[in-house]
Length: 360
Image (cartoon, rainbow, N blue to C red):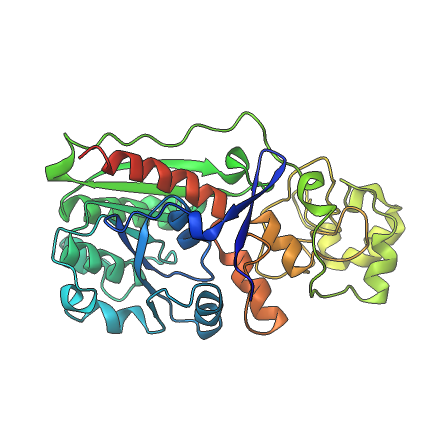
């Protein structure tokens, strides 16, 4: 694979940056948990961090990471297996020395047994192992990202518990909901970003969330010259119906009898059902890229051609460079891309973290 250049999308320009000239500062070390296909890790690397370890349980995602970054220390293990080990020995770093821990555990409800036990309340969840890494390594800062729904999950209890655990482990918290579209990503995708600063460094570290870009990219910026890649097709029946849908339109924009026949029981559902028979427009950003390109209630039809987006088109919507290849079946590749943190969003946040750490 030719990885001489990384293609990075920013402000309607196709920028080619020599990978060998990315300014990685070896003393700014990072470990990433739940690494997936590398969207967050790639953005953090581009900001200048030296990745000393990535943990991911999915073999296909690990194969993707190894394919693109054979020199990274990629650990294909259950996070529970790793968090129980001597992390200082495993990563050759002493407690308190790591600059950044990053990642985002899947959203899971916690079980409360009477008294609030802090970290122990989260035992049995994937978040517990993220918190255990914090406890054992005490990094100077951490980046925890998650879905927007974390704030309201389990009536807000999940979010509240996570913040309490972070504070109990010795961190001052800053959090903000960021939309990737504001940061050079041609996609509307909101992520909750939680930043932690170790309490003994609060007076030395001044972190600010990145400022939104003045230009917001649209699909016209990224689709028209997108390289060919694998993808799935619609059935003949669904394709014939989608031919009626104009760019930017959905089921309400086609003859009622055709829409009613296609939607069946969904026709009587409440709500706008705006995801059904949705065709995107070149003059808008993508809606949130999903793990499956063709679900009845969350369609994302190509603006010009009557088909779902290809894997590479979805990857561009996530601001992955064209040279970043994905491993596994087509289904697995779609899943990896859909689960990723947009590279450019990760870069913008990580750059602010690095600038804050440089002033210590």
